[in-house]
Image 1 (cartoon, one colour):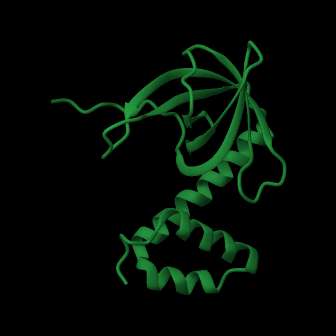
Image 2 (cartoon, helix red, strand yellow):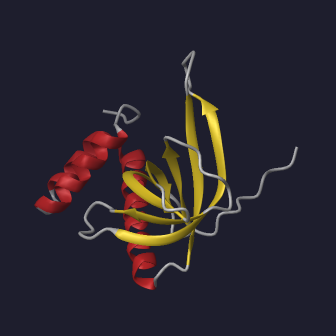
Image 3 (cartoon, rainbow, N blue to C red):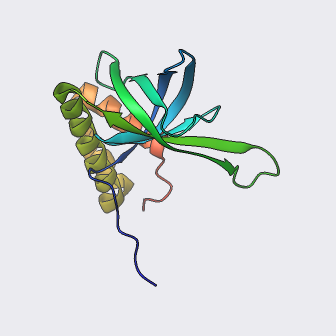
Length: 159
């Protein structure tokens, strides 16, 4: 059995941020970005959106004061049965960013770099070492690090 080639052009980081997007017809939808790259986003939505649909997305990343407004295209749209559930579905869409301004591309790239670094630190060092490193951060960065641990959890780390 052959391996599937990774088609992604840029790294992705797990994020959990709210997003709103407007379709060409003017209807507005909301969702939650699950992962993000400079090329696009994986988004959990209440209602599916047709593939090839052009969208105007708006979201804010932690530590970046103003919301980003980007153009995008829905590349795929799927529904899955909720795990460990007898009912309900999860709707997800993949949005590719189109004509992303360089300033937004760099903001997203830097945010992802920091998120991936923090995730690798948590996995490599274990919670005791991570907490020691967090205590040496500036107050603002310390809050971001605590927020990261709360959102991602630390059950998989050795204490």
